[in-house]
Image (cartoon, rainbow, N blue to C red; front, side, top):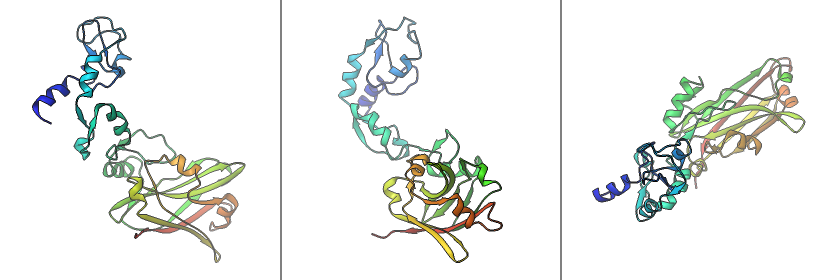
Length: 262
């Protein structure tokens, strides 16, 4: 961005939050502008202390329309230059935007890139991280009849240079209690399609298995669960496949992640 354009872009910086102002831009009676988000939180102009009304600053909006704008995720890799009116919609779907924490069963507000979230899962949620494309995890519950909705800690696998999350939950599906195991991909949906995974439970010569493509963590975990895109196990079957007296849940889920060649 050249110096003259930089000066013009700076005219559209909100004096309160310092973010770029997008329509509708509001101004006080003396012409001082601020963004609509800040306008909703303050009653007086932050510059002259004049009372704020609903005056539209059409001049700055027209100025913005004459310029191209970088994405706010420029510093993390987005190189797109955008028309002023397209910036907000682009940033909502930009592949460089931060990911939500993929922990299941908790409303975690943390966001960040993949490497940050892997460390967050390990250090803050105390999830295990493995350098492996295969797994054999044991999920236990002493009184499964009393558990109607629950989730276990996710297991993160570093595989093929990417990270995957193995999730296990129990929930009510209609009038039945079911367990679901599924894999999530820590990256974009188009990259997730390059991989597949297999899950299996075995006992007494019998097995139950599932193959699928991992779902991107761009999708909330509840959407994956509601779509039933995973290994679904009714409670009676889960107890059948459990070791021991069949009254406690001791379910071993094994499997692997694979690369899909095209």
